[in-house]
Image (cartoon, rainbow, N blue to C red; front, side):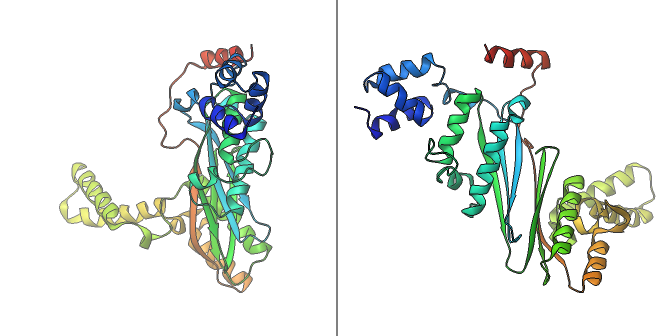
Length: 308
């Protein structure tokens, strides 16, 4: 007799999907060991073994509520760019993002334990990921999530390069119309393009500023500049440094004659309501993950071999 407990044990042993486990147990009359062999023969018991592989490829997905009061980013990783563009993989990422937003999740473990509402085959999000590992033959991992909520403004997102970069931003404004939503989108695109580290000068850690100041001072002295002019040079370069790392100090990508700060001021006057950037987050897929360097031809051959 195939019981829920047997299915659970088989899934934990093999990492295979729930339905595959139920079928294997049915075929073997509930014999756990034989069911493991059945799944191995079908190539469905390797999901757990794949978990140790480096997953540095993948996709960033976003989800925004209809009223623009909630916005979510999720990064789902895999091993190769072949899988990263697979419709099943991309679809799962988007579905997880929606589930994370609906449940206001701020960490990966919470998401993995949620009900996977898109298929009765998988009870939880984690089960759905394991099931896709079995189908696609690669390690797949949910890496990170960020959720924004706003009661006094709008939230918007932007995805660049088919999921290479994702941005979510929150604006504070009395208005919550299409114009403010568009401003949020423009600023998301700014963040995607320029990758600012901080919102404004006040957000910058002073230890970071002092470290940069010392580096710039040493550079100026090494260039043979007189000490009496070094301080002025350093302050000028620090100002330029702020223009690179602080969002509101940057030149606005859509109109380089304006800073982001000036763009927001102009829009606030135009719309008759003050607009203020509250916060932003930027995900770039695979950033910070040490990748395995592989020969491209070898990678193609590996994918071809999987299809045999």
